[in-house]
Image 1 (cartoon, rainbow over the protein chains, first blue to last red):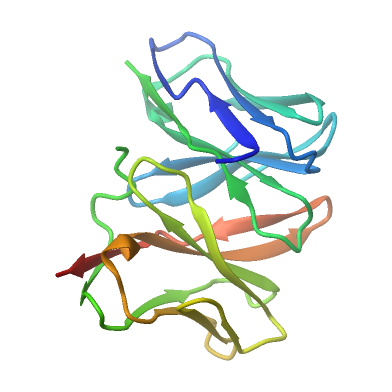
Image 2: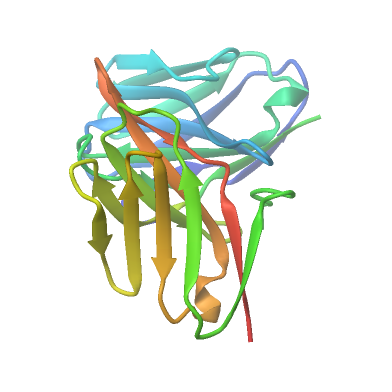
Length: 112
Length: 114
């Protein structure tokens, strides 16, 4: 999707290892979000950011941390990956609450 | 591509017919609603939105209807095409303090038959 990129696109990691996913935007949007998508659950919010160094938890934040040191980058870290964190992760950006989100293409993470 | 839902409700529609996808939302305080389309292996894509002070909004071939009394949202697609085959999600906006946050439904798979 134009203006938002996620990396890596695919990753396989072992249980107990740390993992960081990156979301990069070129739109200068204030709000950034991390969602996970699992069969039967739709998209669930993990963490979000409303500005540089300003972040807050979503509904499924346990086991995840985030950082936003500059406007364009929002990092999602799994400190010690577990099999339950196997999922597809989507980053989204938004200019304001009155606008819909623009989503990235997703990162498929497999924890073995 | 990634599987977005192995057991999603599925709507099968013949090409050229109209499609209606329904969604029940949870929070009576929600003030903004969006429909997204997700194709296999891709992120959700914005289709159309509606604010809570409206009952209906039309786009190109799509119409969203909002019934706040029963907390129901629907997406109508006119003259459905094979390219409309995808999973469709409704989302409701719940504003709280620092930011608005979209809460998504579990999705409906639309299959267009020829």
